[in-house]
Length: 383
Ligand SMILES: Cc1ncc(COP(=O)(O)O)c(C=O)c1O
Image 1 (cartoon, rainbow, N blue to C red):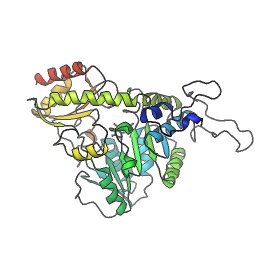
Image 2 (cartoon, helix red, strand yellow; image 1 turned 45 degrees about the horizontal axis):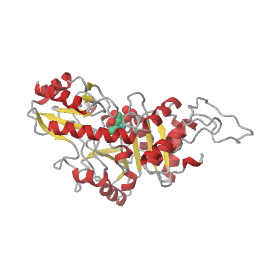
Image 3 (cartoon, rainbow, N blue to C red; image 1 turned 180 degrees about the vertical axis):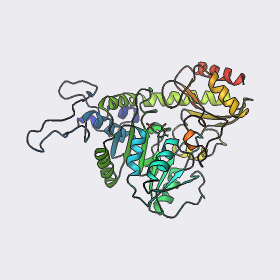
Image 4 (cartoon, helix red, strand yellow; image 1 turned 120 degrees about the horizontal axis):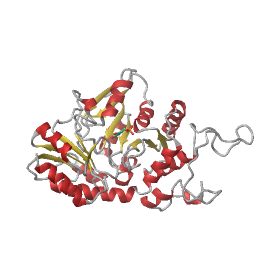
C-alpha cells in the first residue's frame, strides 16, 4: 500500500476517495486498475507480491475491502458477490444446534436464508422485537442479527443497548448497515461485532452492480470470514469491485441529498388525507426515534407509509407515479417505489415478519426535489 493509504486524520469523504486507492505505482493512474488476472506469477515457490490466485485475493477487490473497512472504522473488510453471500459467510460462524436471534422486521432474503437454508441444516433461530429493550430472548443465543433502520418499517434499534445485552449472554452482534450506510452510522463504534452490507444499494449507488461487504475488528472472526470467502468462493468480479469503489467515492454527497429529498417527501406525506401513517426515523413519534438520534448522523433516504385506503390504494399509488419507478431494490440515484407485501417482502408472508398490506416503500433518489414531490402528490391525490 502507498503512503496515501494512511487514513490518519482524514474525514469520511477523503477516505472514501483515497483509502486503498493509491495511484498505480507502475503508471501513476489515479484510479486503481481493474485487475482481471486470475493468477499471479511467483519468483520462487511462495514468493510473490501478495497475490496468488484471484479467488483468494485480487488487487481491485483489496482496494474495495481496504476502503470499506476504513469507512466502517473496522480493521478488516471482505467483499462478496452479493449481500446475501456476505450474510452467508457470517451465519457460517455458527454450528448446527447454535441459535441466532433475528430482529422481527428484517429483509425478507435474510429471513429466507436463515429459515430456508441454515434452519434445515441445523441452526436454531427465533425472531424478536429488538426495538423493545425489555423483550425476552432465548438464553442460549450465540448471535443477534439486527437491522437499523429496518427494512421496510424503518424502525431503529439501539445498537449499544442490544450489544451490551448480547455480550453479557456471550453472543455476537451483527448489524446490517445497508440502509444507513457508513456515512450515517458506524455500528462497530456502538458495540457491534460484525457489520454487513448489501453493496448493491447505497454503496454502489447506481443500480448497476450486485455486491456484499463484511467489516469486522476481531482478528479471530476476520480469519474465519476470510477462510469462508476463499473456501466457498462467493467473491465479486474485479469489474464489480471497481463499480462499488466508484460509487463509494460519492457516497457522502449522495447521502446528504438523499436525506434532503426524503425530508421533503415526509413533509408531503405527513397530514396528507390519503396517508394513514408515515414511517421515517426523524419523526418524533417514530419507534426508535431516540435510537436514531443517538447513533445516526442523519435519517436516511428511505421512507415508508401506510395508505388510508388499504392495499387497493397502495397498489394504485405505486402504479401511478412516473418519476418514482415501480421496482424492487433501493439506495440508488433514481427514486423507486414498491409494495413490500407483494414484492420485496413476499417471502415473509404468514411469518412474524409479515408487513402491512397497505404499506408503500420509497427509496428517495437524487432527482429534483420538486419533481419528486409533485410526482408523489399527483399519485396520492388521485387515490
Ligand atoms: C437490508 C438488506 N440486506 C441485505 C440484502 C441482500 O443483498 P443482495 O441483494 O445484494 O444480496 C438486501 C437486499 O435487498 C437488503 O435490503
